[in-house]
Image (cartoon, rainbow, N blue to C red; front, side, top):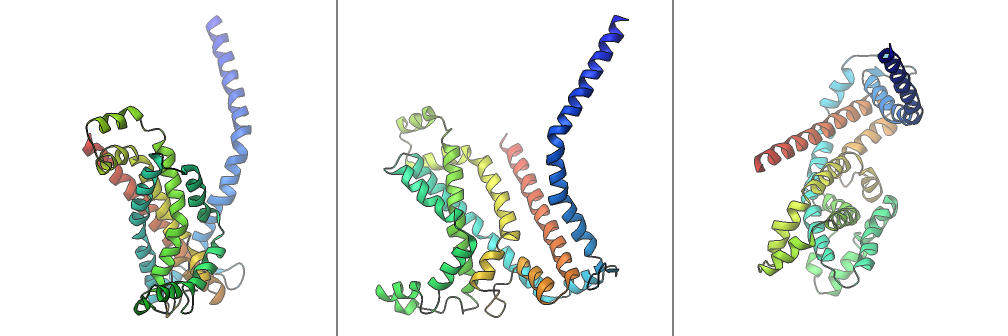
Length: 302
Protein backbone atom coordinates (compact mmCIF):
# COMPACT_ATOMS: atom_id res chain seq x y z
CA UNK A 1 0.00 0.00 0.00
CA UNK A 2 2.81 2.35 0.95
CA UNK A 3 4.56 1.59 -2.35
CA UNK A 4 1.44 2.56 -4.35
CA UNK A 5 1.10 5.84 -2.43
CA UNK A 6 4.74 6.67 -3.18
CA UNK A 7 4.21 5.85 -6.86
CA UNK A 8 1.15 8.14 -6.97
CA UNK A 9 3.12 10.96 -5.32
CA UNK A 10 5.99 10.47 -7.76
CA UNK A 11 3.57 10.55 -10.71
CA UNK A 12 1.95 13.77 -9.46
CA UNK A 13 5.36 15.33 -8.94
CA UNK A 14 6.44 14.44 -12.50
CA UNK A 15 3.15 15.73 -13.90
CA UNK A 16 3.55 19.02 -12.04
CA UNK A 17 7.14 19.28 -13.30
CA UNK A 18 6.04 18.63 -16.89
CA UNK A 19 3.39 21.35 -16.66
CA UNK A 20 5.90 23.83 -15.25
CA UNK A 21 8.44 22.90 -17.93
CA UNK A 22 5.75 23.42 -20.54
CA UNK A 23 5.15 26.97 -19.33
CA UNK A 24 8.85 27.74 -19.75
CA UNK A 25 9.43 25.92 -23.05
CA UNK A 26 6.02 26.62 -24.61
CA UNK A 27 6.60 30.25 -25.69
CA UNK A 28 9.90 29.34 -27.33
CA UNK A 29 8.29 26.42 -29.19
CA UNK A 30 5.47 28.67 -30.37
CA UNK A 31 8.00 31.22 -31.68
CA UNK A 32 9.93 28.48 -33.49
CA UNK A 33 6.74 27.23 -35.13
CA UNK A 34 5.57 30.72 -36.13
CA UNK A 35 8.92 32.09 -37.27
CA UNK A 36 10.55 29.00 -38.80
CA UNK A 37 8.34 25.97 -39.33
CA UNK A 38 5.17 27.67 -40.63
CA UNK A 39 7.00 29.78 -43.28
CA UNK A 40 8.79 26.66 -44.57
CA UNK A 41 5.49 24.77 -44.87
CA UNK A 42 3.84 27.76 -46.54
CA UNK A 43 6.64 28.21 -49.08
CA UNK A 44 6.52 24.50 -49.91
CA UNK A 45 2.73 24.73 -50.39
CA UNK A 46 3.00 27.81 -52.59
CA UNK A 47 5.50 26.07 -54.85
CA UNK A 48 2.55 24.02 -56.18
CA UNK A 49 0.22 26.97 -56.67
CA UNK A 50 -0.41 29.76 -59.12
CA UNK A 51 -0.92 32.58 -56.64
CA UNK A 52 -1.15 35.52 -58.97
CA UNK A 53 -4.77 35.57 -57.83
CA UNK A 54 -5.40 34.98 -54.14
CA UNK A 55 -5.70 32.36 -52.68
CA UNK A 56 -4.13 30.59 -55.65
CA UNK A 57 -4.93 27.54 -57.71
CA UNK A 58 -3.18 24.20 -57.62
CA UNK A 59 -1.06 23.62 -60.74
CA UNK A 60 1.03 20.63 -59.67
CA UNK A 61 4.67 20.63 -60.77
CA UNK A 62 4.29 23.38 -63.37
CA UNK A 63 6.30 25.87 -61.28
CA UNK A 64 9.07 23.32 -60.88
CA UNK A 65 9.15 22.78 -64.65
CA UNK A 66 9.43 26.53 -65.22
CA UNK A 67 12.33 26.88 -62.80
CA UNK A 68 14.21 23.75 -63.86
CA UNK A 69 14.11 24.79 -67.52
CA UNK A 70 15.30 28.32 -66.78
CA UNK A 71 18.97 28.97 -67.59
CA UNK A 72 19.16 31.78 -65.04
CA UNK A 73 18.25 29.39 -62.24
CA UNK A 74 21.29 27.22 -62.94
CA UNK A 75 23.52 30.25 -63.47
CA UNK A 76 22.46 31.60 -60.07
CA UNK A 77 23.22 28.27 -58.37
CA UNK A 78 26.60 28.15 -60.10
CA UNK A 79 27.52 31.55 -58.68
CA UNK A 80 26.49 30.40 -55.20
CA UNK A 81 28.72 27.35 -55.58
CA UNK A 82 31.61 29.53 -56.74
CA UNK A 83 31.21 31.69 -53.64
CA UNK A 84 31.48 28.54 -51.49
CA UNK A 85 35.11 28.37 -52.61
CA UNK A 86 35.98 31.40 -50.49
CA UNK A 87 35.20 29.50 -47.27
CA UNK A 88 38.64 27.76 -47.16
CA UNK A 89 40.29 31.13 -47.85
CA UNK A 90 38.48 32.78 -44.94
CA UNK A 91 39.28 29.87 -42.61
CA UNK A 92 42.99 29.76 -43.52
CA UNK A 93 43.51 33.51 -43.08
CA UNK A 94 41.46 33.53 -39.88
CA UNK A 95 43.46 30.63 -38.42
CA UNK A 96 46.79 32.33 -39.05
CA UNK A 97 45.64 35.66 -37.60
CA UNK A 98 43.96 33.96 -34.63
CA UNK A 99 47.10 32.00 -33.71
CA UNK A 100 49.26 35.14 -34.02
CA UNK A 101 46.86 37.03 -31.75
CA UNK A 102 46.72 34.13 -29.31
CA UNK A 103 50.48 34.22 -28.88
CA UNK A 104 50.13 37.62 -27.21
CA UNK A 105 51.21 40.19 -29.75
CA UNK A 106 51.34 43.82 -28.64
CA UNK A 107 47.93 45.52 -28.78
CA UNK A 108 45.97 42.27 -29.00
CA UNK A 109 42.76 43.71 -27.48
CA UNK A 110 42.83 46.66 -29.85
CA UNK A 111 43.25 44.35 -32.85
CA UNK A 112 40.32 42.22 -31.68
CA UNK A 113 38.06 45.25 -31.62
CA UNK A 114 39.20 46.54 -35.02
CA UNK A 115 38.96 43.12 -36.69
CA UNK A 116 35.39 42.58 -35.49
CA UNK A 117 34.10 46.00 -36.67
CA UNK A 118 33.33 44.89 -40.28
CA UNK A 119 31.06 42.13 -38.96
CA UNK A 120 28.80 44.59 -37.15
CA UNK A 121 28.69 47.10 -40.00
CA UNK A 122 25.38 46.90 -41.95
CA UNK A 123 25.58 45.00 -45.24
CA UNK A 124 24.18 47.97 -47.12
CA UNK A 125 27.00 50.20 -45.89
CA UNK A 126 29.61 47.62 -46.87
CA UNK A 127 28.04 47.20 -50.28
CA UNK A 128 27.95 50.94 -50.97
CA UNK A 129 31.57 51.32 -49.85
CA UNK A 130 32.78 48.50 -52.12
CA UNK A 131 30.69 49.69 -55.06
CA UNK A 132 32.32 53.15 -54.86
CA UNK A 133 35.80 51.80 -54.12
CA UNK A 134 35.85 49.44 -57.13
CA UNK A 135 34.30 51.77 -59.69
CA UNK A 136 36.44 52.63 -62.71
CA UNK A 137 37.23 56.01 -61.15
CA UNK A 138 37.12 54.60 -57.62
CA UNK A 139 39.71 54.42 -54.90
CA UNK A 140 41.18 51.05 -55.85
CA UNK A 141 42.20 52.15 -59.34
CA UNK A 142 43.57 55.40 -57.92
CA UNK A 143 45.76 53.41 -55.50
CA UNK A 144 47.01 51.25 -58.37
CA UNK A 145 47.84 54.37 -60.38
CA UNK A 146 49.62 55.93 -57.38
CA UNK A 147 51.96 52.94 -57.08
CA UNK A 148 52.65 52.78 -60.81
CA UNK A 149 50.45 49.74 -61.40
CA UNK A 150 48.22 51.46 -63.91
CA UNK A 151 48.41 48.40 -66.21
CA UNK A 152 46.21 46.62 -63.64
CA UNK A 153 43.50 49.27 -63.74
CA UNK A 154 40.17 47.83 -64.81
CA UNK A 155 36.43 48.41 -64.66
CA UNK A 156 36.11 45.93 -61.81
CA UNK A 157 32.33 46.04 -61.49
CA UNK A 158 31.74 46.28 -65.23
CA UNK A 159 33.82 43.24 -66.13
CA UNK A 160 31.87 39.96 -66.18
CA UNK A 161 34.96 38.06 -64.95
CA UNK A 162 35.85 40.45 -62.13
CA UNK A 163 32.48 41.48 -60.68
CA UNK A 164 31.87 38.26 -58.72
CA UNK A 165 35.41 38.26 -57.22
CA UNK A 166 34.76 41.85 -56.03
CA UNK A 167 31.59 40.65 -54.29
CA UNK A 168 33.58 37.74 -52.84
CA UNK A 169 36.16 40.22 -51.51
CA UNK A 170 33.39 42.15 -49.75
CA UNK A 171 32.09 38.93 -48.18
CA UNK A 172 35.59 37.94 -47.02
CA UNK A 173 36.17 41.41 -45.57
CA UNK A 174 32.99 41.14 -43.49
CA UNK A 175 33.07 37.48 -42.46
CA UNK A 176 36.76 37.29 -41.59
CA UNK A 177 36.38 39.14 -38.30
CA UNK A 178 33.78 36.72 -36.95
CA UNK A 179 35.95 33.72 -37.86
CA UNK A 180 39.03 35.23 -36.18
CA UNK A 181 37.21 36.06 -32.94
CA UNK A 182 35.61 32.60 -32.91
CA UNK A 183 38.98 30.88 -33.28
CA UNK A 184 40.70 33.17 -30.77
CA UNK A 185 38.01 32.37 -28.19
CA UNK A 186 38.61 28.65 -28.63
CA UNK A 187 42.39 29.03 -28.48
CA UNK A 188 41.98 30.58 -25.05
CA UNK A 189 41.25 27.10 -23.66
CA UNK A 190 44.33 25.44 -25.18
CA UNK A 191 46.59 24.02 -22.48
CA UNK A 192 49.62 26.26 -21.97
CA UNK A 193 51.58 23.27 -20.74
CA UNK A 194 51.24 21.63 -24.15
CA UNK A 195 52.47 24.76 -25.92
CA UNK A 196 55.38 25.17 -23.51
CA UNK A 197 56.34 21.52 -23.94
CA UNK A 198 56.41 21.98 -27.72
CA UNK A 199 58.64 25.05 -27.32
CA UNK A 200 61.03 23.05 -25.13
CA UNK A 201 61.13 20.34 -27.80
CA UNK A 202 62.10 22.99 -30.35
CA UNK A 203 58.84 23.10 -32.32
CA UNK A 204 58.65 26.06 -34.67
CA UNK A 205 55.64 28.29 -35.29
CA UNK A 206 54.30 26.24 -38.20
CA UNK A 207 54.76 23.00 -36.26
CA UNK A 208 52.71 24.39 -33.39
CA UNK A 209 50.16 25.72 -35.87
CA UNK A 210 49.54 22.37 -37.57
CA UNK A 211 50.10 19.93 -34.70
CA UNK A 212 48.68 21.77 -31.69
CA UNK A 213 46.35 24.59 -32.67
CA UNK A 214 44.61 23.05 -35.69
CA UNK A 215 43.64 19.81 -33.83
CA UNK A 216 42.33 21.92 -30.95
CA UNK A 217 40.24 24.02 -33.34
CA UNK A 218 38.74 21.13 -35.32
CA UNK A 219 35.25 21.30 -33.80
CA UNK A 220 35.10 25.09 -34.12
CA UNK A 221 36.25 24.92 -37.75
CA UNK A 222 33.51 22.38 -38.49
CA UNK A 223 30.95 24.67 -36.87
CA UNK A 224 32.17 27.65 -38.90
CA UNK A 225 32.06 25.65 -42.14
CA UNK A 226 28.37 24.86 -41.56
CA UNK A 227 27.57 28.49 -40.75
CA UNK A 228 29.48 29.64 -43.84
CA UNK A 229 27.67 27.20 -46.13
CA UNK A 230 24.36 28.62 -44.95
CA UNK A 231 25.68 32.16 -45.40
CA UNK A 232 26.98 31.62 -48.95
CA UNK A 233 23.74 30.01 -50.07
CA UNK A 234 21.14 32.17 -48.39
CA UNK A 235 22.53 35.33 -46.79
CA UNK A 236 24.44 37.28 -49.44
CA UNK A 237 21.54 39.05 -51.12
CA UNK A 238 22.52 42.38 -49.54
CA UNK A 239 26.00 42.32 -51.08
CA UNK A 240 24.75 41.46 -54.56
CA UNK A 241 21.79 43.83 -54.57
CA UNK A 242 23.80 46.87 -53.45
CA UNK A 243 27.10 46.29 -55.26
CA UNK A 244 26.04 44.93 -58.66
CA UNK A 245 22.29 44.12 -58.63
CA UNK A 246 23.18 40.96 -60.53
CA UNK A 247 25.19 42.67 -63.28
CA UNK A 248 27.06 43.04 -65.45
CA UNK A 249 25.28 40.77 -67.95
CA UNK A 250 23.90 38.61 -65.08
CA UNK A 251 27.47 37.77 -63.99
CA UNK A 252 26.62 38.06 -60.28
CA UNK A 253 23.13 36.58 -60.12
CA UNK A 254 22.73 34.34 -57.09
CA UNK A 255 19.79 32.26 -55.92
CA UNK A 256 18.50 34.89 -53.50
CA UNK A 257 18.49 37.52 -56.25
CA UNK A 258 16.73 35.05 -58.54
CA UNK A 259 14.03 34.59 -55.88
CA UNK A 260 13.69 38.36 -55.48
CA UNK A 261 13.43 38.98 -59.22
CA UNK A 262 10.88 36.21 -59.74
CA UNK A 263 8.71 37.36 -56.85
CA UNK A 264 8.78 41.14 -57.12
CA UNK A 265 9.93 41.97 -60.65
CA UNK A 266 8.36 39.16 -62.72
CA UNK A 267 5.39 38.64 -60.33
CA UNK A 268 5.92 34.89 -60.30
CA UNK A 269 5.69 33.89 -56.65
CA UNK A 270 5.40 30.20 -57.52
CA UNK A 271 8.82 30.16 -59.20
CA UNK A 272 10.28 32.09 -56.27
CA UNK A 273 8.82 29.53 -53.85
CA UNK A 274 10.28 26.65 -55.88
CA UNK A 275 13.72 28.24 -55.83
CA UNK A 276 13.48 28.76 -52.07
CA UNK A 277 12.56 25.11 -51.58
CA UNK A 278 15.44 23.93 -53.78
CA UNK A 279 17.88 26.22 -51.97
CA UNK A 280 16.71 24.89 -48.60
CA UNK A 281 17.14 21.28 -49.76
CA UNK A 282 20.65 21.98 -51.09
CA UNK A 283 21.65 23.72 -47.85
CA UNK A 284 20.34 20.88 -45.67
CA UNK A 285 22.07 18.33 -47.91
CA UNK A 286 25.43 20.10 -47.75
CA UNK A 287 25.20 20.45 -43.96
CA UNK A 288 24.28 16.76 -43.65
CA UNK A 289 27.17 15.70 -45.92
CA UNK A 290 29.66 17.85 -44.01
CA UNK A 291 28.51 16.29 -40.72
CA UNK A 292 28.83 12.78 -42.16
CA UNK A 293 32.33 13.54 -43.45
CA UNK A 294 33.29 14.93 -40.05
CA UNK A 295 32.09 11.79 -38.27
CA UNK A 296 33.89 9.50 -40.69
CA UNK A 297 37.11 11.46 -40.38
CA UNK A 298 36.73 11.38 -36.60
CA UNK A 299 36.21 7.61 -36.62
CA UNK A 300 39.20 7.21 -38.95
CA UNK A 301 41.45 9.18 -36.60
CA UNK A 302 40.37 7.00 -33.69
